[in-house]
Length: 253
Image (cartoon, rainbow, N blue to C red; front, side, top):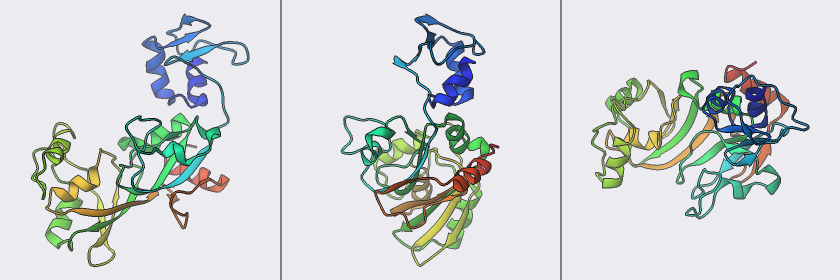
């Protein structure tokens, strides 16, 4: 089926494929097809989506320890360096799962498995993400409790009221309340926070809403996968066991 083919190729998740096909974004042998269950033969049919021919590729899942200063995107002519430049050219068909802003570092998953990427990144599946955060000062108990319950970022008052930061707070959308999270103190100014959302710059803005400045932000875990001792800027393929556990933590068989 066309919908399954798009998902297995890594072009998008199966749910997204349903929408894209029905909206007429996919053509088979030069003809637009709007029926997701239409049968195709990958060995002889030409499938085009977003102006590129889609090919079946073996699924791969990579763990990268992203350095600070590198942009999480496939391509950006304005970026000094993208995460794709840290990988061999043969992995050009992979894409990053979720966000990790330029200044942040740590665990980043890249894959061509659309269904796995969707389950890992969509907040409705509540896949945990763990971050190690260095603050400009010690986190007091009152602020810790407020952050754990969830804070309203829309219209909040960050510690450094820069125009760019206020705009980022507004960009989180209507309501802007973060979901409950867990915070554990590691050292005087260092904490560990566990969340299952992935709004743009969320962790930084959460602490800014309570008057704190994040000095360092490292993602150490996503789902069952941990960063471990992988060196900064290095990558590796997941083991079969890691992949199986990751899929299970994302709600996939």
